[in-house]
Image (cartoon, rainbow, N blue to C red):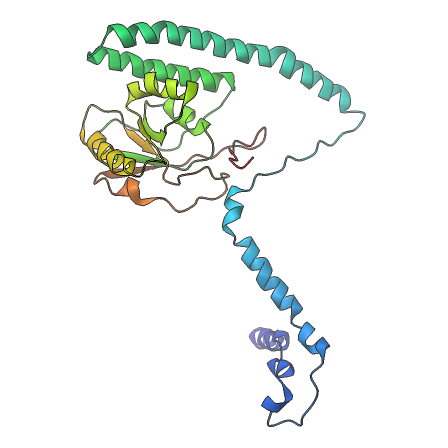
Length: 282
């Protein structure tokens, strides 16, 4: 009985297509006039179809979440003021001091090792450890809490790690755990200086989007990198752009054509305090 009633309801919900056909196409019925109100009856169906198309749009993968407004009232206002004092009067100076001390220690140890121990394996080990240390300082300055699931990455030849990409800090969060060699866009200025002097010590590979011939050179360097057992594990963000940590877009196939094992890494951010999504449009 239940199934028959459901079927009956479905029949009632179905639109009567004959009501929207012109009169000459209805041989079994007498001729009648087609009114505008008959055509407008299908507007809910069109609205629902358009809504499904918009909801399925590719742009929702890059939509930033607007912050929720604070539920202000006179009772919570003193606590809000106390929070401002703690954040900007205590926590912010401590975080800035942590970063400052970390950079001083890093540069004081990195440059002597980088320029005095050329061509030695000891230099590579110390540089890797210093890069991991500096990334750990960044996470500590954010008071970041990282929870790991599954086995930690191990340094083995013939493997490549792929991860979803949400923000610039993805690299720091993963680098403080293991000194990955990352493929990234080449930048000018002080960012380019850091890339050339510091990040190249862990085997990072740069590419230039404006140079068409650079694609083949980078592909060859990637294949050579994964074949060498002493190189740091290679990390690639195959989405090619930052996504809002709610969806993933189609991976580019280059990471899967290196002839080695592909190890996936999934990063999920907790948005209670801040949204980590790096919206390049804004």
